[in-house]
Image (tube, rainbow, N blue to C red; front, side, top):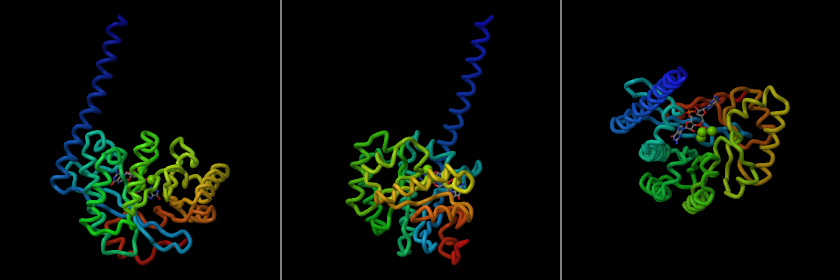
Length: 274
Ligand code: C2E
Ligand code: MG
Ligand code: MG
Ligand code: MG
């Protein structure tokens, strides 16, 4: 009796697993076609100076509006692009497109997300150098965003890549800080110029006093260590005020602007000042 029950369960489990795997393969195939058919776009979200609230840069964010089976968000396909190896091509596309787009807008800095898999590629630094050369994008205006996972995975390789990128003149930022396990002290060894406080933390500062103290403390320590601090996910006036007070250098979030196509960003005359 129990045998057949167990068997039934295994079959059910297999079916669920298969359908997850099938969906992944489907999306993987869609990404491959999407790259061939130019279905991806790059949108931009303003990053503002915390003092003046002027837009000083943008973060490039990939979009997939022309996927025939319907648009997917990056969170739904980046991981699949990573496991399938398609992230190399997709990542190169984003970097090239973004550098091309922003090249002529010399007052804006450009921040581009880089997946752990891309960073692991031994040719990564060369690929970045190539894009910079071909697009004639000034290296000093480019910042690459990496996540903690990557750094913890392979500290030696991370340290080397960050050092080489700095030699190129490009800076490296730690994205999504506060979602993982590592301390600022540890991360300091990698010489990140910038840390980006994760949006889940910005969401805490307007309602929870203790959490708010923790976030402010983090910001103060990072600043004291000489790092530039960016808060992402700023959604309302109260969060903006708290994060400015806590000493953030730069702010990013829906309160100022959602990610948009390049033309919309360039035509932005007024970001919300609060
Ligand atoms: P991220 O790098 O942390 O980017 C910030 C995400 O937060 C973006 O989501 C942005 O649209 C969203 N966001 C901005 N302001 C607010 C706000 O005020 N509130 C809230 N709730 N969200 C806000 P998006 O574009 O869906 O991207 C999600 C993640 O996908 C990114 O997180 C990044 O990890 C990854 N990603 C996006 N584009 C690329 C890319 O070109 N390459 C790689 N490797 N990853 C990318
Ligand atoms: Mg980012
Ligand atoms: Mg982030
Ligand atoms: Mg992220």
